[in-house]
Length: 333
Image (cartoon, rainbow, N blue to C red; front, top):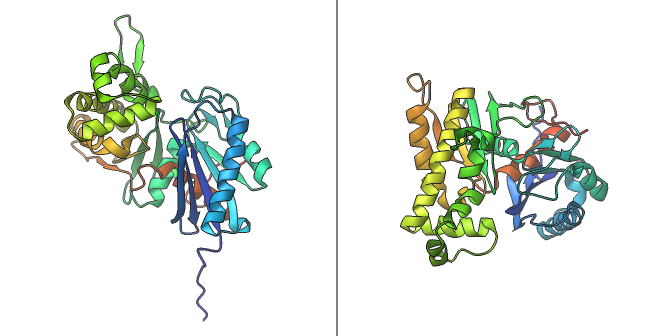
């Protein structure tokens, strides 16, 4: 008998997470282990055409820097905030990426690189990244809550992605958590995401000036998060209020999917994640409908900032090398 060993460095995949706050590039090997990572400025106001040109060049430069021959790359996974049309590979119009409406991103990148390209929702990819990172071992029903500039979530049931009718399921940012005085719905994203926190901060001009809030929304959120981590009372109040609103939405998600596992991923949790974790864990396990039967394990993702990009690369490996395994593959057109 001859024992064969797979050379995990023989092939690799590239994962790219597009966000208004940042863009993350990763390269993973056949084991799903990260061998390279790069984070750059977010999409901002750049047009899709300009963005794709820069993205393709950045991938090329990253592979050269890592000493990886592009012939070893099996494909590129790209993930973006929803809504997305996974079947057509189209970004439909994320709320924090104003110029990105009906953008055929998969085909644009494939045409520029000649490589297979997979497009998916960033929160779904983050859940897949957590699966590969070992964060949900033993979980039957898991959700990864992903927060960049906006809010999303991805759900895995027994290790299989729950996609819904159009792969835009579990949009936690659009869960209605209250109503205003006129009866209009208030969704979680309007009160819990970084943009909402910055907006509230500026209703207190003196405090905003004291904290030195400047730059884009995510830069200002990071300033608030860092001040909160230092114990600043005003900043801590903003983060804790956001966490309570988010915990209400997570509880609704837990009741809908009978979750036993939740992880928090995305750039917004990089600095203040421990505060969100403490508040969400306590509130969810206090208010969860089936709490007398089982608890919910809440934790930070092992790849807090990179889970979506890692999941994107993993989707490529699943699609190109083992498309029928584990229920994680997504349509490539």
